[in-house]
Length: 258
Image: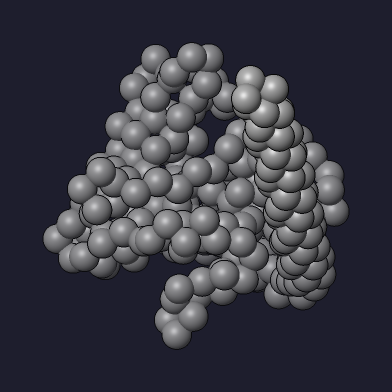
């Protein structure tokens, strides 16, 4: 009886080991197939993004080329009119036109360099100054929309290495998106702060918010939830590329109360 019990125990142990081995092998096969599927999806996603970025590069090159001629005409006419003007208000207005034309040209050249894979030339600029430039450019849009814009940028903030026109354009894009998402009477806040050797530009709005899936795709080229309103789906993708070339990151987060 003792030998029989020992044999039964050995058989039971052998069966248990065999079952554990079989289950481990099945689990390994399952994990391997899952990893392959995940890798395949990741490759397809990367190819999809690469295709969109190639399209974005082609569009950017075409737009830059087509804008060159009318922009030159605007600058030429404005310079000619300013040289002949004797009205101080007209002269100031034409100076603004020329300044904004130069800004458009700088942005177009910068975006064109980005889609070509070139790094924009960086120069030191006070973080608060960049924020002030962006706020000045969008203030009239906020007034038209009935949305209050509050900016907080302490004067002791350090300088950042940036291409001023491109970096200000990122903030302009984020602020305009926030303005569009905020109902009339609401508020958008731009906060600039220094933390741990980095400078953070934080734009907060009082909109309804977006779900996690939309937030994950918001910076993809050509993805937009405002197609009926003329949204191109390029603003955030271009902003992300500009921030990336400035050695920074662009993140989207929901407010705690949304």
